[in-house]
Image (cartoon, rainbow, N blue to C red):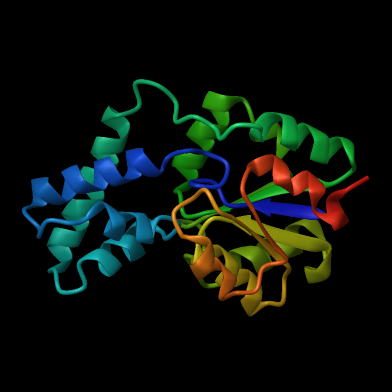
Length: 214
């Protein structure tokens, strides 16, 4: 099976850093004060879509400035790599040893994802990946469709794993099974609306889902 993973909030424990960087970026632009919950809600979207969701009435120049300042804040915060969630490396290794393939579908930019692949030494584990600046942003399912074509998998031979409704919505749109994670940006109650096959409380819980067991 092809296991397609969201990155931020699913593989990488980056929510706190994303929120802090966006809050500082909005302050620099002079936009209205955001709540941390408002920022958490847009995690998973591409940066242009996130800016439009957070500030729908803002001029384009302010949204562009927000995106630029967010990128600057993110780079300034990179003193240390964003940590992976507990059990990620071991779980990925076990999935591969069971004969499954791994892919990534993320709201990050290609440059951002490649940087984290390099920092964590994980890039070689994935057969394919799609980023928001290469295709349509979540919840549009285009990135999933493109990953299926690239890996020559049928929709029923893949599963989307993510922490937000954007992840599960794009899977539901094309009839792909999905698994939600409870420890990320969106609460399990919201995830349940998209009828995932399971909601797991830790990344290693993937190993117990029947189609992924030996």
